[in-house]
Amino acid sequence: MTGSVLLPDKDPLGAMLKDYYNGDKTAYVRVESPVLDMSKMRGKTMFRDEFSDIEQTALGVCRGRILDVGAGSGCHSLALQKAGADVTALDISPGCMAVLEKRRVEQRIFSSLFSLENQRFTTLLMLMNGIGICGSIEGLNFFFQKIRSLLSRGGQVVVDSTDLSAMYTRQALVPGETDTYYGETQFTMSYGNICGDPFDWLYIDYATLAFYAQFHGWQCEQVMTTKDKKFLARIF
Image (cartoon, rainbow, N blue to C red):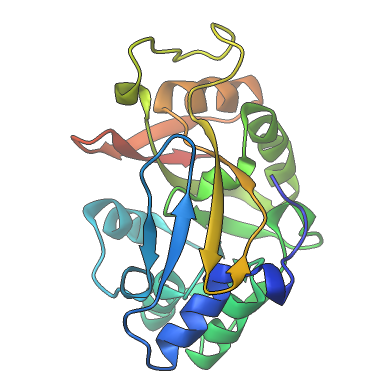
């Protein structure tokens, strides 16, 4: 979990997206993880305009004033903007912010979700496993406290994630059975000579997400799920 924005020399994703936007269609970021095989994040993927079923469903349930958390290249923000929605793109990457401006995403905020103040939204949209920014179960607890100051009355969080339990022989679906929750991992990104700092990332299964949502007084519903254990949920 981070409450700060990135510096340009620690922003490999933003640098890659700028190069892709400026014509290098082979650009990609290298991603290292002790758990997952995610060797590359390609610019082509980040600039896509065709979405998965989960993404299409998520965009369809957005309403009111929308905050696109971790907007990246702005693909989801632009889709919503073109549909006439009131959407604001949020990102901690200065490179991403530059790309968002060039792509004419009209409303942008350069900030971490956890540092954001004096703003209220009807929908927090957190796609591409956006809730991963919590970093850990501890961070997830803080997230549920933080969103009380960000959501308008009757607001919602629309989020997707992936249950990693199939990767393990001993499933710890409820934290506490082992020292750490199996969905807690860490990533390091690099692009050219730019290497970002390692950051914690959280993949959450639906049962655990719903458990902590309810613990903090929120309701949680599973909107859809896929065969590869990805799911879309609403928290409200």
